[in-house]
Length: 140
Image (cartoon, rainbow, N blue to C red):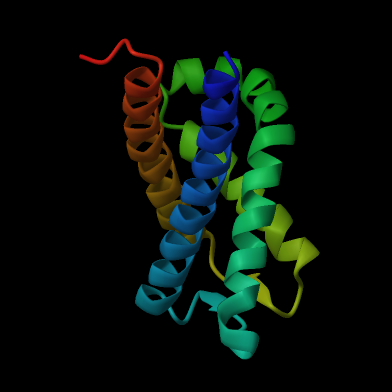
């Protein structure tokens, strides 16, 4: 029984690290692609991208469920096309918190970045769910 609990805790840490690294890669890649609209401070070996990723993760765990609940009517009317705009709101909040180190200058870049984060969330969650099923012994 202890091995399952230990494995579950290890998996939660792996899940967290995977998502933080995924957010970091997405934010850094989009800042390279859209250098005129996204600024991430390069100082300290990219620590600001990691801090921004941690903030995105924390806001996704705390504020995002409330935002999803609040925007159910408009998300339903747009058949899910409004969902990336929730990630846009999260990115704007991170931009406000890390003012000077992480900034978004244009609205359309933020829509693209939010869309990329949404896709990354879907892919990473699918991969992590497959790993969770294999650890629990109910693999495909």
